[in-house]
Image (cartoon, rainbow over all chains, first blue to last red; front, side):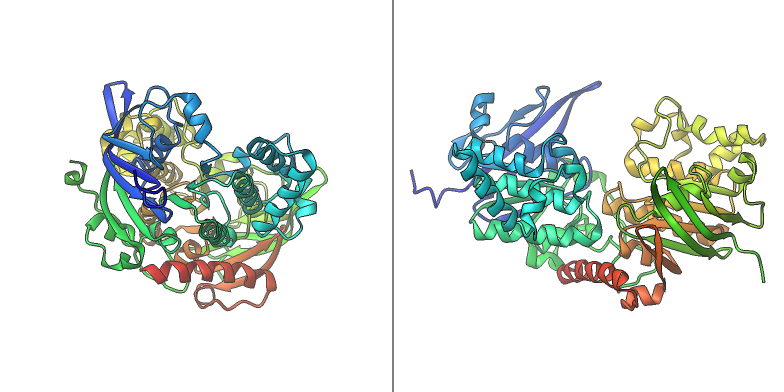
Length: 282
Length: 253
């Protein structure tokens, strides 16, 4: 076996995910191949493209009705195929963390922000109350919260969406995971904070040498925060390209996704739209 | 001077002790598309709902096409219609698309309903056969097309849009925005468009009103919005964030 630094963080080969449907099985992901190290990768696609289920398979969060098969499905050399719930439990949070779309739904409404981060610190570091509290304050500061003392005692309903997402990120950092999966982390936020949150995630991932799997429907926006982009449609990878070569995208689906968002200071009469082709589904 | 499509004067909306809209005045000219922007909680959706009669007017008045301030429900619904943010929540889950589209016609005692439903579906680019389907059998974008068809089936003179594309993929957003622009050009109704994405609002609207904490801060023209010219500090802050996002997006294109 090679040293742990050489082995990919995520190695997926022929990942196929099938759900039981009313009219027979429905395949949500077809033969997905993805190898990534401690780098930043975006999976981009529309609703139903299979981007979220692919990431959820990695962390063992698919419903029991889902059938997952792969010729390889490794996380840092650990085979995830057929892994038990207890096995995933050991990975979740401590090695693979996840941030979801709406912080107001993923935070516990009955606990203050501080209590939730302290809980996460104590769980993962087996620390005493005081040490955990100090660590929580440091983490709030690390995610650019200006008054950590004040925010510590706020309940989720008392914070804005952007602040809530920062609290989620602080909780996730408490465990010092190796891989962060961010599933549409900015879709529920006001425009004024979207780039701030993406900036924050990118900075932390880079500083701490983590891998980032960023899932989004907004190709234009996330490409700037990642090294590579995987474009998915109907459960299949259409194209994988380096983010900085996005303008050279070959696939007509990718070309369609670029530029469909109206941008301030860049007026157009009619927005470009996608011509979805049946051939892409096979 | 022709009467305004919507004339709002000194409007305030209070819920108990909380004042959500504070003395807002502005008007929408016939055929114009006006945007309302601001962050969550700025009162933009409440203004739309007050125009629709869905929220109480605590102070001030709203006049729609010269009608009395508190028109009866049928008159109001025949003149103003609204499209909501979440097409998953705004369509009756147990009714077929045909029935959903037919209901306003039935309530208003309008005949030739079958033909009107077909015409409404084709106007929003959906196959006629969709009238036999249920909302859960449609994608988010298709549902929002149905919501637009339902709003337009009574041929209203004013269309209110509350973040009509925020729940959709950006690729589907483009399709729905193009459809709205095309229908607006063909039929000439007036639009009041609530959004938080300045790129989207600048794409759709001739003028934009900026709200903060229920107060109207500034009015900007489409050109000023694209150029990023604003006087008010809050508007500048919003614009700066949007321009940073625009820079990020244009950088990769």
